[in-house]
Image (cartoon, helix red, strand yellow):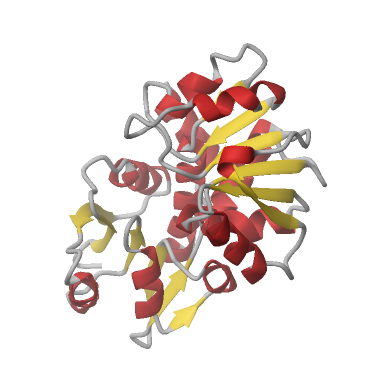
Length: 272
């Protein structure tokens, strides 16, 4: 190999992303030679930028907000996971020049929940939000035999997602403002709640009854605003999405490089 294989993470904004640090750590642990960088995509010309990125010889990339659906549409071949989510977080250029799309978000979430021992069959799981983040992980959670309750401010949006996924398993839509008492074993925050100073009073009605909270947002050295609120209830345990981020990245890395990474080792090093 005369030059390093190129990879990147595309998003907007992207300066906060830990993905280059994560994937460069993967490369070191597995003796892979590559370049992985951040790319701030244009909200107007994203498709042209990605096309040029691969024309210039790049091997693959990760995709984050707000481009996951647009990247999915750009690809010509899709994994089953990407087709179910109707979005992708991983692109790979194939030997025939075609663009392959995968979605490793759900796999990453399941791996981290298993690490925590928070994934029990047939438990009630409350998911806050019915947007792209939820859609990316819903299939994996339903295949893990979870009973899903989708809570969203716009109940029609939650109902549309339930309708689209009704053949996959047990799920129903509820209003975020009017969450009933169902005895949930786990709550997953798939919203940006708290990042923009939102009011958390809606949690006061039911949060103290839920033992485990998982925030798909993450901060390296501090609690997310959502987790800080959750932990004010003495009975709650809360974890952020750093484990999911690293696990899903390891799955992308395996797709690109054909090697398996000890993602738990990487997570432990990041926590330290």
